[in-house]
Length: 286
Ligand SMILES: Nc1nc2c(ncn2[C@@H]2O[C@H](COP(=O)(O)OP(=O)(O)OP(=O)(O)O)[C@@H](O)[C@H]2O)c(=O)[nH]1
Ligand SMILES: [Mg+2]
Image (tube, rainbow, N blue to C red):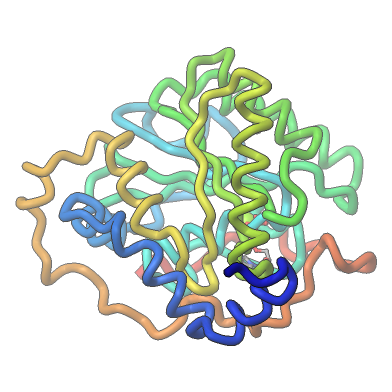
């Protein structure tokens, strides 16, 4: 017979393997040759350039997917986890870190990832916020190569006002959206899949038929799923998959987040510094 709810949950936790292992088990079934190839392909990502505005962006040809979401949702971290490179995109515990439109090529300048600045970061000065909103809007409206968005939402605070606006706007523009409920490591498995179902339901209610998954940059949950969705949308073909040189893929790294697990989070903390150097986007692109 079944235990009572609380008890069965506890015994389940006690018997469960460590969270990380159970997550890995969970994605196993989703691992196909295409998703593995896609993941390897994404590791070829290289920093192309940062643009402060639309007319300074890289040439608008080919295919592009942008990572969007509230400030601190984990966009830059997700790109780093996905590409298996520690500092390809600049992640930070300080919200408002990403301040330009950042382009990354995927072995081919016509297949790109874009890291966008987050929206909804209250501590950015109002005037700057307006300029940014405008540039972001410009990019989202006019960028021809933009296929769609990976929209990241903290699993603990999904579907905030701006998120819903973004979803509806993307829908009206006929862009695809693939939703990531990020920082899934912050919740146990049960609550995490419950959150997933709830957001899924709400999307359906809004008649927004977008795909959605759990994701964690910290324990790498959902990497293969995200990789294959992205590769498909970026027109990564199996033909191309067999073409590229496997030797050129960077070695796997032990951990991509160099910050501790006890991360200060904009959603938990009130006093947060404003990101320091706005203009200095110099970085090593290897
Ligand atoms: N626990 C946990 N923390 C994460 C995860 N992903 C990101 N973080 C943390 O969340 C904070 C923000 O991460 P970023 O990747 O910089 O967020 P962002 O969305 O790029 O933020 P902006 O550039 O300000 O828009 C950092 O402290 C990260 O370490 C995750 O999967 N799990
Ligand atoms: Mg960022």
